[in-house]
Length: 137
Image 1 (cartoon, one colour):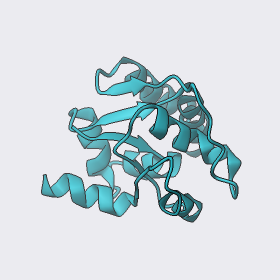
Image 2 (cartoon, helix red, strand yellow):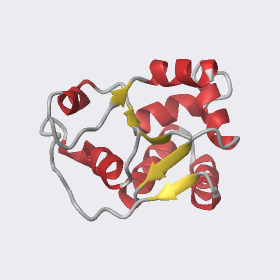
Image 3 (cartoon, one colour):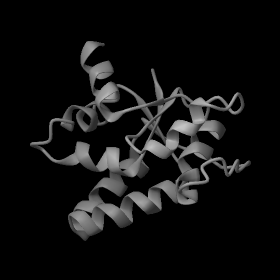
């Protein structure tokens, strides 16, 4: 089972029932991959989902994430601070490294720097690539 960190925007586009990326959220609901989150990521998910939808939707999703056996809370013991263009997104790289993720799902271009460094090795794939991966499994 893949161990995955999902950027907030990639998670957000997968939530809507009519979204072409909805199969990603459905795969999470059915336990087809393990989502890795840190406290900082969970807080950001809640904040952004509440802004884009409402507090009830955000609360339901956070409740699911906290209770799901397919969501793993990762303690961050080391912070790399490798994403200089948007330091706030380091939480995703740190979670991926500390949680031994197979990859990060994101469409943010500044994550490309992760492919240019030898260590830590963190693979990055787009939301579309992750959807394709899930639909071909």
